[in-house]
Image (cartoon, rainbow, N blue to C red):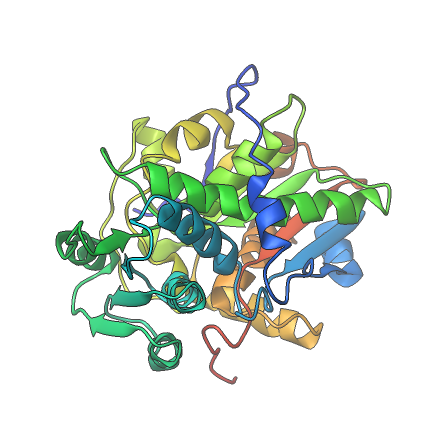
Length: 355
């Protein structure tokens, strides 16, 4: 049975090192860099009974329709610093869409090739977008974990670099650089809210393997008294709740979902210590809940794909009319609270079917 809300008591004494600021300075040198918008959603705030809801709109990030540009660009930059000088390399990854497109774009920008593996269920337009960036694409018939295994098995260390946004024993350095890259997003949010004399009380983070969640936790748990943080996944790929229940990373079988970028059944080993110590709860949402939220965001001029809309679906499930009993108290939410939704992908990344 799928657990749709798993509250978790975080370790209140646990903190972690603050993220490096090197990635932020690097991103500011890239063509087209600008902080992405932080959009106030007063009607959603009223619906949820809080003071403010803000959507961090990642629909246009460094020329791509998703936040993944931040992690891929920084990780490829760092990896190439360790590659033989002057040798053209092939950057390899598995993806359910946007990470692969970002790897393809920045591999080409930095003068290298890309080879991308995709699992079943990725939207044809997302696969074409990867090819349009100049990458070789291999479409696999299995799930995301199968595609990751195929990408890793294909590596020739003399010519290839695996830039994967999940980690496992013996493969942690490059995924850690991807997590560092995402820190730019949260630094921007801090500045944007500080200008309004506000700060985050609850951050709702969409989760695939958990790299963005790790970045959020490393940012907000670097100091005590940070905000509540919850994860959101599709019900057909909800691995965080069973992992919290088992007190160890736990894999689940995945199904088909419109939230293709979140359709991952195994949490990153690198992210796990942050999750188990720093997370306040895990939510799972259905496709119907997600699609309704995506359409509502579109009506508010927030161009979100289904993955980006998952945060709103989760907030509504917990805090909206008929929400889950005890969730508001567990998360410390009051009428004065500020909620941050991460709109991780724009509507161009994974088109939503019209109603």
